[in-house]
Image (cartoon, rainbow, N blue to C red; front, side):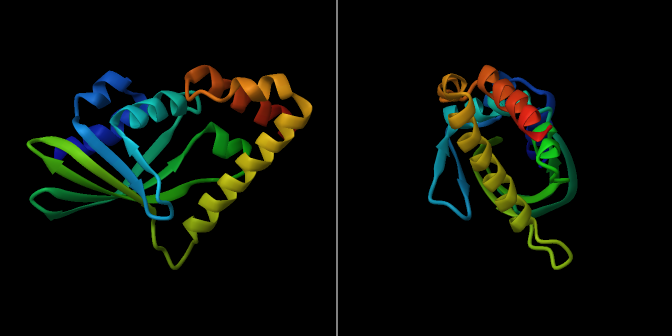
Length: 166
C-alpha cells in the first residue's frame, strides 16, 4: 500500500494540503494510551505544528494485514526531542485504507523487549509539561501565545526549550 508510505514521507516534508489529499473527509486518528481522537482538520493542524521541529522518520517495518489495513513500525525524532535529550521513539501505526484514501490511523509505541519506547514517549510528555510549567512562571506572556497549534507557537516552544536547556 504505497499510499501509506507516501503519507508517512509527507509528514516529514510535505504540506498539509498534500496530506489532506490522501485522507478521507471523515478520517480520524486514535492513540492507544488515550481516549483522544483527532479528526482530519486536527491531524492537519498537528502536521503544521510539528514541521517546525524538523521531523525525521525511518520506516523499519511494513506489514500488510489485509487488503485495507497496513501496519508500519517507524522510528521518529525531531529537534524538540533532541533538546529534551531523547534519541528516537518507535511508533506502531495502523492505517485503514478505503477507496484509495486513508480513513483511520491508530498509533501506539512499538512493543520492544530491548528498549521501552513507551517510557521514552512518557519522558517526552513529562519534559513538555515541565517546559510549559517553566514557561508559565518565567514567560507568562509567551506561555499565553502557545495556545494555538501553528508554526509560530511550535517555533516559540522550541526556542524556549533550547533556552531552558542551556
